[in-house]
Amino acid sequence: MFGYRGNYILAVVCLATGAFFGSIGMFGSIKVNAEINILDALSLCATLLIAFLIPTTVKKILDDNRSVKILLVEETQDLLSLSKAVYAKINNFYTSEKQMTGADKDAVIEAFYTAELKMDSIREQFDVSYPDKTLIHEDITIALLKYKSFVTGGIFMNSKYIEIDHNFFMENKSEFSEFEKHVMTKVHKIHKF
Amino acid sequence: MKIENKIVILTDFTDSPGARYREDGDFSGQEFLEDILLDKFNDAVAGNYILLVDVDSVWGYPSSFISGSFGKLSIEKGAELVLKHLEIKSDNSKTRYQEIISEIKHPRSDVRV
Image (cartoon, rainbow over all chains, first blue to last red; front, side, top):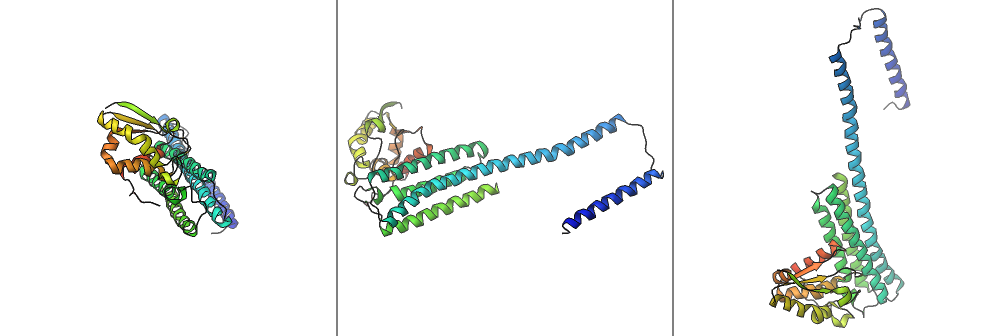
């Protein structure tokens, strides 16, 4: 609220408070008992230790949790990138009016296989860190297989289908967009764990 | 029930499975079903044993292949019987395993594309 001025004000207030209590001690208003009770000393040590340990432990738990979440989010976004490569490939065939070869289709199938392996990895990481959140990765798996089914489950796999037509191009956009939305929703859910 | 026979897709069929129907191209799901899977599956049912299908080490399975083979088998024989006598070995990918099992449990209708 006060910006840098606030720091100066705080410093002056601290100084004034210190000087005030210091002056009280100096003029003998407060008597300090120099005898130390061992139980009081231990109690003070325990209090200081707890005061140090609790915030440190809580901070570590929060940091660890955040790191795991960031890792899972990155992995999920990698899955999206892998699938986006298929989407872009199909777009490219349509816009460039290029004919597809068998090797081009094999590359699409292989890309999906890589995405499936990524999905396996995400599932295993969930099992380790969030075993009670199976619905999240199950939903992502279903969404991935739905997009895969759209691309490789129909006309695209026919060896006589060598040019992406307008319908397939448009449907691919819509199917990928659905998949992307689904995955990004899950990414938000992971952040909210 | 014990496993008494097996099909390894990589060595018994191809490393690059194709589309749904024979007329769609080589190594289709229909070709796999009719030339390899169906007879061995029928033998497994008759002999009351399990047929293991090893789907590992293949580039990838188009959904149309899975639908044209495992899905079609499920439509013809019933999901319960297929799951009783067929075991899928997919050590490479659990997602692949899930896709095949899901297709057997909920086979898509036999729509020609």
